[in-house]
Length: 178
Image (cartoon, rainbow, N blue to C red):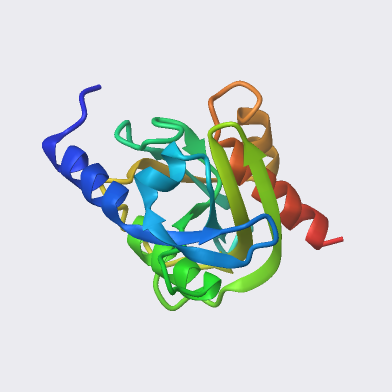
């Protein structure tokens, strides 16, 4: 599948966006373009929003091929990098609206955790929301979306490419429920 000119332009603009740069203790050090943060292996802030429908099913979506990390992977959470000067909660609300078109849903905070892989260093905030509003997918970010049971999402993640950072967020969410 080819990457559309819109997706290429969106990725270029996204890579120039200033995001929060933090240390190992999640203390803000400054703001850097997303691409520079990634290239230098520095730590950023990120939000993960697990969206459920009224039946308790989780929204999973497939990322576009233009994404710098995990292109074409399935994702169990909406979310993204926290912009410079933005609070975690504000980022979560913005990302849920941008990616899936869900606005005004009550966000429930679960916890923060540090995610560390060779190409992805993040302080993460995990939220959940419940909404039966129709999804409006952002075409530059999301190819498709569906609601599935937690068990189905976990089973699929063993055979399909799923984003490891959002899977870590899902595990943190499940742990936070007791």
